[in-house]
Image 1 (cartoon, one colour):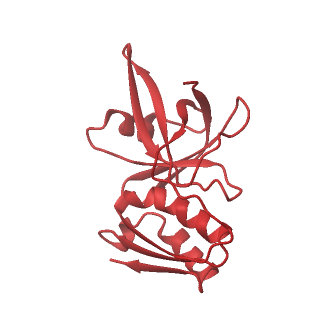
Image 2: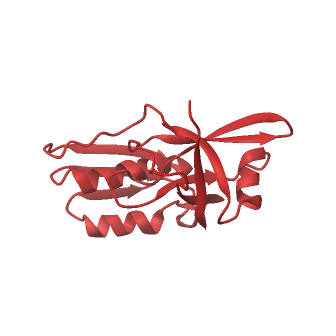
Length: 175
């Protein structure tokens, strides 16, 4: 499988010890993906290859760059590296987007979609929400989202902004 190169263009530290990395693709065209998929980053450390997968929080149906969210794990070799050693301009290597937890919108449908997430598990759901709201004009989305506190709620402001923008079609139930 051919690897893709991703240049870090933006880094945002967010609630819950989570880092959102945004990329451009210096070698050409942005890879095709479905809402809900993930990227597997590939690292060469001390002569061994390490791979870690991170869900895409960007939507393929919105004009936005590729983005992933990485929760810092105290003893996580790669998550700590990404949080503390990565900078804007760095180029990371990844496998093409992958994963079966996907959402394929159908513009002609009218349906109600229920999504349940907790903590950093909101990451692929955030991609799905943006995709559904922007491509299925007659569908409704209901999100039940659990987190420890408002201060630790990933994408809190962005989700509330979407709820305001799509008030008739998007409802969030915070737990």
